[in-house]
Length: 147
Length: 119
Image (cartoon, each protein chain N blue to C red):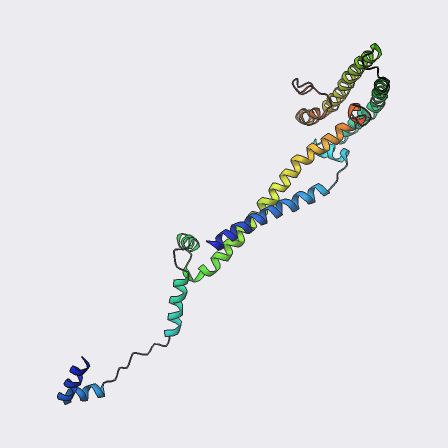
């Protein structure tokens, strides 16, 4: 009985070690995002090139949104430091912040949809299902973009 | 009792002679030692152990039973290693996709790119 218990423990230890080693070795391999995107969603060379072009075209839009976000954030921080949180200026900044957030989310979601549209339909759906939940401030009650 | 036997021997010279001439000669048994050890081994691996029961159920002959147990143990360990490695690979595949997806979205979501600055 003691030998059987020891053996069962050994079996569990071997399984746990194999799990740990495999997990460690697999997570050590760092794959470039583009390589991953191409492999994971089985993109052809043409699809991959179109998606890269979409990404390049989106960069200035993204940078413009970043600038606007930072500008609004700086304005709000300045007003907070000045103790003007109850002022009309702060309310206006807050309103602008909400508008910028909404606009950024919409733009990002639109970009994701454009990328998904370049993929095969099943892969596109899978892409959106994987990416959309990672968006900031995304309203998960409403699965926008996932068709 | 002893007194009775001595009296019988003393009084029956024929019996006394027969007893003196009697010799027991057992038949020759050249494999006596080996057979004794075989019985000891058989008793040691008595069929009450679960492994012996399984071996008997599977029809493994007694002379091979000695090898069946380590072989079964090795197979069980190999299976455990495969199972663990498979689970590790599956878990990596699931979590890695999510991790890379999160990193990918971070590169296209301005709100996440500027998250360190405010709010």
